[in-house]
Structures are given as structure tokens and as C-alpha cells.
Image 1 (spheres, one colour):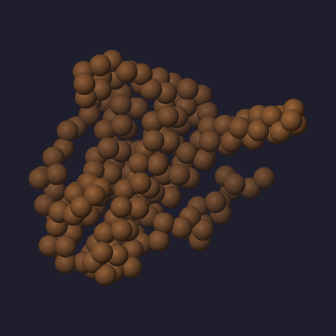
Image 2 (cartoon, rainbow, N blue to C red):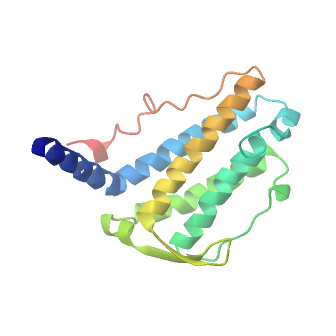
Image 3 (tube, one colour):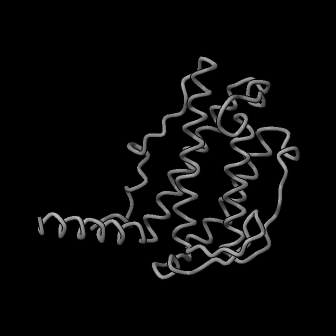
Length: 187
């Protein structure tokens, strides 16, 4: 049994080292952004009334969900780069193009942050006040991993809605996106 514990310890440490790598964090966001762009293209093929229609489960509908994904990303980013968070309202984004613009602007800001992200950055602490007015502290890596998983969660809900309206959803498959076909991943 001691070997099993040792192998689990080694696996956990390997996973921890890989996840903390800046290139791993960048790859997770590159994945999200590519899938998001595919959803934007998918939405351009759907009637606007379907995109704005309120649905069961998830975050109300396609447009509301896409806005929510980007808004959460930009709010956390503001905390990580120590700038004031901008509180946007969904009602200010009345068409798909405005959400696409919002997404690309946020991505540009976030890419700059990721380009300067180091292994040591992951251990930095963000002090904030939550919705209940309580002081909270989060480490950067926790926030970044939350953002990566947050988007995947909502993309899954949009896939369900796509099938409900009789459309094939965007695949969320990482395989074939060629995110790992660059110099960063050559050993």
C-alpha cells in the first residue's frame, strides 16, 4: 500500500506542476476563446429571436450566457490587473456583434495579462469583497482555473439548448484545435 500512496503523491505533484505552468494556463484560455469564436459563428446562423429567447436552466439564453461568460472574465481580469471593475449590463448589448466586440476587447486585455504571467504569479493573492460584503482572498491560480472551468460549464448548457432547437452544437473537443502544436510544447 505504501507504493500506491507514493504514486498518488507523485501524480498529484506532477499535476500541480503542469497546472501551475504559464503555458498550461494560456492553453486553457486559448481553448476557451477558440470555442467561443465557434459559438459566435454558430450564433450568426441562428435567428436573433432564438438567440435572445429565455430558456430553462443555465443562464437564461444564448446571448445572456455569452455576455455572462465575457463579463465574468473581464471582472476577474480587472481584479488580477488591479484596475477598477466595469459593471456592464446585458441590456447594453442588444446584438451579437456587440458581444463579439466585448469578447475580443476582453481577450486582448487578458492576453496581455497572460503574456506576463509567471509560475510565481499563481501564488499571488487577490483581496476582494464578495457579493455579501465580506472580505475574501483568492490565489490567482484559483481564479484562473475557475474562469477556465466556468466557460466550459456554460458551453455545455448552450449545447443542450442547441439540440433543443434542432441544431448541431459546436463541438467542445480539444483534439484538433492544434493548441499544443507550437514551440511551448516541444520537449
